[in-house]
Length: 354
Image (cartoon, rainbow, N blue to C red; front, side):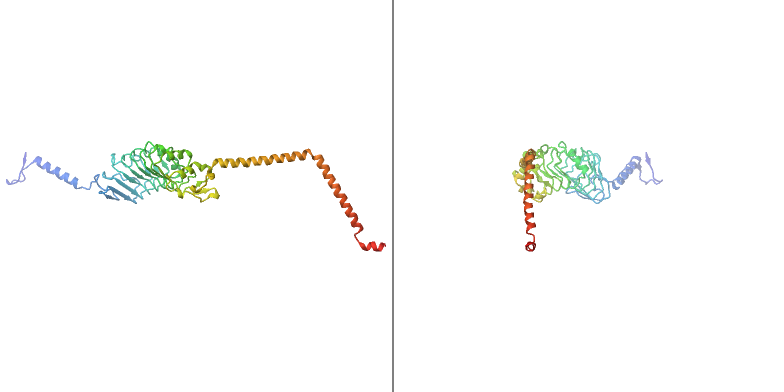
């Protein structure tokens, strides 16, 4: 079918299908020129450097993780956001996995990490969750991170989260973890059930509330020669309970900051470096022997006292007579002195009598 524009025979003829093609092309051009986001675009309020694969988002008012992270991102840095909860698959972009290797989430006010929060990041090597306010960590929080090498949780754990940490740091989900930093969390012990189940090379426990390291962990440390443990700024209690750890510290080079480990108790040893203690200071056998010797001395003295009292009781009659005799002798002696005193008290009376 042909359509004529006007009655002029010189008018150009247009087929109907040609007009439809022109319309579709114009519509497609409008779509391409419209401001529709693609997966390569930089998220709003973020700075992107595609050459290095880095996306940095700072000081935003968003309460969620950006959902439009570019596919080419290898390093994502979120700082100063208001992310209270990391939900399941929070970093999956439209349900697809990302090739991200570094994720920094420090200073974001994060309070809870739900199960599988980092799902979709199978190639993640470094995760930084420092300087948050974690109240809850799921036992499956770090599942889905088979390639994770470094985990930073410095100054992030509130007491409730610290109690859940040992379950969250399961060897099954973090079997390739090389470095674990837990500084400034007021931990009282190593939060790993068994050290030999991990591939750890560095364990940072600086500035916590650790008073001693149990012999179970010390035994593992003797076996794991590759690991380095940082323990400065902890309030060590330097009594005989520190014995196993003290001898490990003296005989091993696995604690690079050993010279900065100081005693906090007892008062007599406050401020003394742990490695400068003497063997008898942490020897439970010596301390027990001293306690036994004091007890034995007390028993001997008590026995002597009982024998003395018994002797006094059995000789009470003779002792009474002896005391009476002494009393009588003293009385006779005093009467003699009294008589002489009356006779010689005033020499003038004797002259008058003459």
